[in-house]
Image (tube, rainbow, N blue to C red; front, side, top):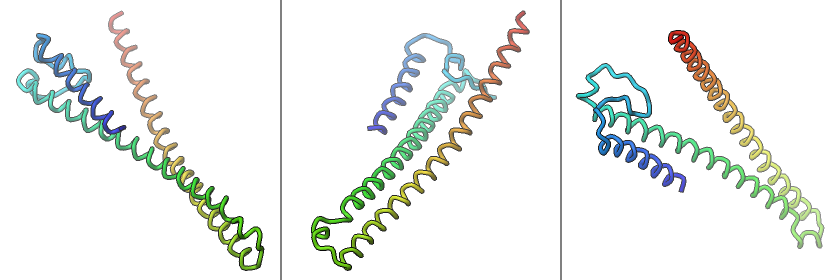
Length: 165
């Protein structure tokens, strides 16, 4: 469903931009593209190739974002599944039949079941901590890039206001 939603969203954005370019009589220039780019070629002559380049970038970027999000969602579901397995094994480590007939052999089986369940739980905790540390590093880099871009854009706006005034 997530992949279908992503593909439909990219398709709608592409069709919307194409309809804007073809039905509204606008000169063939890059000024009405949603992202400002600079090409060192004749922009009017190669307008459709530049538009194709923009669509390709949009599709690839959308698919990359979708793939990363889906992968993280799959990892979280996997970790939750491991926790459910560990919980199930802890609950069923002491069987009802074993409780009624406690012998040294049954006690060893109960202890081994609990040890195995705790080991699975430990591995799930280790995996979740590892995933969260990677996620924290990604978010830290994203915040640094976002703050830097905002700072540079605000600096450019303030510089433009100095020129105008």
